[in-house]
Structure formats: C-alpha cells, structure tokens
Length: 451
Image 1 (cartoon, rainbow, N blue to C red):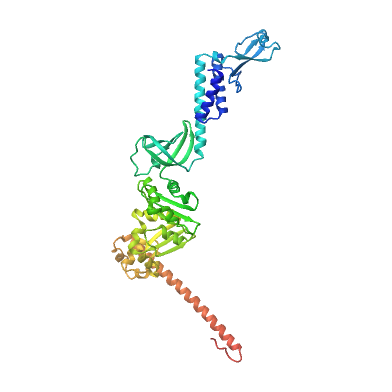
Image 2: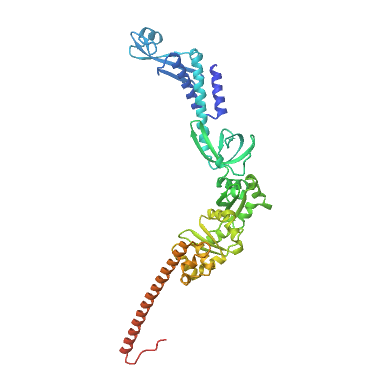
C-alpha cells in the first residue's frame, strides 16, 4: 500500500467507525513497532512515526555506536555508523532507518492483529462514552436473539441486553427481527466491551412513553410528578401543570383516549390510572385511590401515615385485588395508607372499642371479634370469665385467659387513676373553699357576689 492509499484508508476508517484520527495513527505506529520487534528482536529501541504530509511511515532502529559489536540488535560499529552519519562517535545512539515493507509476513500479520484489536478497543470506548450519557433514554431496537430468556437487541452501533428481570411478565413471546422499545438503565464497561442494560419494567419507561405521546409533557407544560407500576398489570401516574387553562389529566388521556391508548398498546394492555397531583395530601390520596370514593382522611404527618375511610360497599374496590390499588396509591403518594370502611371507623371512635385496643396483645382483628360478640369495652369482659371468652370463635383458651387478665389489670388501673384524680379534685376544691372563706372573713362588708 503506497503512502496516498494509506492516508485514504485512515480517513475512511475514521469516518466509518467514528474514531479519533490521532488514536488510529497511534495504533498504527504501535502495530508497526510491534512488527519491528518481531522481526529484529524484543528490544524497545525502535521509533515509529507517521508522516502526515507524505503519508509514509518512518521506522528508525536506534543502536549504540561501539568499537566492537557484541550484539547486532542494539549495537553498530563505528565504521558502519560513519557511513550513515560521518559525525558519529563512540557511545552515541544512531537511528537506522528501516523499510517497513521488509518486516515479513508474520510481522505484518502481527501488525494487522494489533491494529484490529486497537480499533476494537477504541470503538468499544467510543460506544461506552456515547451510551453512558444516554441512561434514561428510550431506544427502539431490533431483536437479534434470545439467550436463556435474556433478549439481545441491536440498537444501532451496539447490542443491548434486556434481562428477564426487566421484561414485562405478560410479554413472553419474542421473535427475531421484531422491534422493541426499552429504557436504558445502565451502561458499563466489561472485558467483552460495553454492556448496555435495558428495561421495560422501570417506572421511568412509562414516564418516557407518555413524554413521547404527549407534546405538553415534552414541552414542559405538563409535569409527571410520580409513577407507580406493577408491570404488565396496572400503573398509576400523577401529573400537574402550572398553566391554569390546561387539564393535565385530559392532556395525557388525549382525544377519545388516543394518547393513553398509545402507551397502553406499547405495554401490551397494562391498565393506567392518571391522577391529578395535589399539594393537599388528603385530596391527593383521595384521587390516588380511584375508582373508590373516600369519605374521610386522617393525616399523621409525623409518621407520614394516612387513615382513609371509605364507604362499606367500596372497601374491596379501594383495596383492590390482592391489595394492588392501595399498594400502588401508597407508592404514588409516598405515604403509608391504612384503609378502613365507615362502620369499622365509627366503631373505632367509641371509647369502649378504644379500651379494647389498649389491652396488651389485642389488635384490631381480636378487638373486632370481641366487639361483634357483644363485649364493647374492657369492663364488659370482666362480667364473664375467661372460659366464656374462649367460646368466641377465633380465640384459644390461652388467648382468652390472657385477654381477661389484661382487662382486669386495665380496669383496676383506670379505677385507681380515677380515684387519684377524684382525690386531687377534692383537695383542690377544699383549698379554694378555704381560700374563699378567708377572703370573706377579711372583708368587713361581707363577701362580694360571685357571678
């Protein structure tokens, strides 16, 4: 290959592979140096430079000028040196120019392998630098193969991995050549090259699909505040806007549901609830629990806990199948949610029911059993013995005995506290009576009328 062809080849490779020209030239120089070592020995006294002006590769083998040569690989006689440079002297190093075309077939093959490997390394680094900055972006790739459930997609200049754990459960049939959208969640450099990890289950994938479907989101008019998903089954997404003239939910739904249906189709039928975000946590959770209605919300800001009361007939709707609706709502708002029906809530408000809950070892389930059996307070439990309590379905004799003893201790404690309060009140009353009598005695005109 002549010098002009070499220059053109370098230019073409840089264009096709997107490689830095300086990196390719350094690789070429290293490959020629490796070939020179293979041809002339393993010494490091070779200098290789690519002449940009001429397109030629200059190879110099540096040798020490000596009187008597004992190593042809590193030494040159003074007589031979003076033929190349008349000013040569003993002890100096002289660069002997070599013809790169004379390195031989094995050396040339070695140079070719170095160039190919370095090009692969440079291309690998280039791909990694590109995709590490694209984490969070949705790509559209073509399925190349399926390996033990993991899907390998061609996404342009690289292959990406969609692991089984990041696939939507209901999507079980994939075919080679099929196109698939996924979110880049990671890009790391491993020994085999850059590994790009994709996901179709990540909440951000749902958000990115809405951004692609809804211009108001991509333009920043509508904002996605929060996303909660159970991939392949159901999802909730909360949206807001600072523009009072725009309905953020309507913008995401689209005319006759066209926009949200585009997302649902991509997710193979995953149901999506679009919720209006509110800074009022009570209104926010009421929307998040849709389609169930909400009667009352009790907020505990310290514990970030919400007690939500719903109509009796809508309790199962609020909780959802296997608790899915309340679970997704809790993830969406970021608070713990305890859903109760109205009857249970009203019962919990009664003093007697609360006294049952104060007994050690009695939770809501046990309190409900006792209340429904006619024991509306801790005091009621003492009207029978532990054996009668054990007749309640769901209570063992040991549990019944424990509850009866706890009720006895509780009632005695409350009675003692009430007695102490009564004594303190009597003492206080006696004090004020005596004080009033002293004040009356000190007033010559008698006590003033107290209104």
